Image (cartoon, rainbow over all chains, first blue to last red; front, side, top):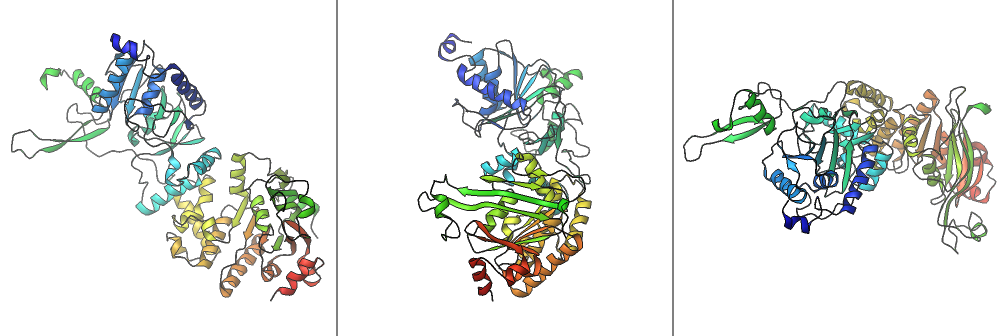
Length: 294
Length: 283
């Protein structure tokens, strides 16, 4: 940490009282798995809706001894991840890593890392939308009562309707789940691929929505069940025969890129690669790859 | 004729007021004063000290003019509004079941009790149905909340209910906006019956329907009552409906129950001046 930053900002940017407030709400969120807890959501040097919820959670729980990993869409080097990581390291001086195994706090948007996380690790998610009932009850006050009374009949009708109209459950992302058999939770921003990874996970997951001013949590070893019917099951994204063009993995969440060499007449083509970039690199190293080769 | 042990619903001292009330409320509101609103503190006494018992398989009618508190009473029993005072006891019609006080239930238990044990049919279908969902989805709501998780079996049950309520089963996936008023009332009845409720609440079900459709809906309700020995609470301002369906009747005015007894007795020999006016003004 430079001396200039030490003088201007508190450790972790926001002041200690704000951090304590976030931690208090997080304790409540952990005690009531899946329940949305309102929090103050302070102003930050980045705009709301750009990961401020996850950022405030990380700021509130981080200590000088932590090792931080920040990813966006599985990638450590995308713009959002780089900026959030820079803000955190400049104001705390903690060491960072791209290795999932080495990190103690992983802040993410979208993905849960491919590698199995451990009990001593915390996953912090930046959440865009909070309430799964928003689709069926736009009035927040009434939706809160519905959560309180576990009145999820209408959400189930929404699932029924999607099967009737589309022939199968047609929810791409924001897949609703029931946490610990009680609260319905929106799994934004997690893709369906990773939803089942929350179920009885070893790690603690903390969700923060800065714009909507809510935090919620899935503690370790908590049941997370996606809404599904006995004759229409929850399905993850999967395309037959798809594999990563770099490491050849077939068991990871893949993203598509359009590849075209600049300055040539080559028309370009689509390739798929692992969304979790650091996992992909690890697999490549195991196959005898060095960075200079690419 | 009715066994004392077979009551389903027991209401005592049920009161709902909007406002704080004042010492002069009691002497200035009620049927003798022609208003349920206190002229001094503006408190509205929507339902005052209502009490009655409903027995297994019985149909109880509630009549009264607009603003007499009959809908408030219905909403109190449907647990959609909280009473200021009083108790509502419900008891399963089976042997050796224990009675439950619905007023002191917590929200979670109440929500699930209402889903499983109560069925309600509203005057306006938009209140009871979600017009954005299909007809089948509306009927399925109570089943889904009661943990039915097999689409095939749910649809079998919906089809069964639609046949029972004289709806064309092939229109299961249609938009409710394409249904006529009488059909929508039948969709509401199908939804209400889906959980085999212990008590069916009917709030002005035939008001706003034309006469021939009214007759068909009433026939349907009477058939369900006959076949399933359904206990019903029937709110109506139409004495004809009450006369056809209800064995006993309660007459309400300005928030008070002014008269209660057998329907025949009330229609043939009304005692309270308001009931006399009501009966004499019936067409």
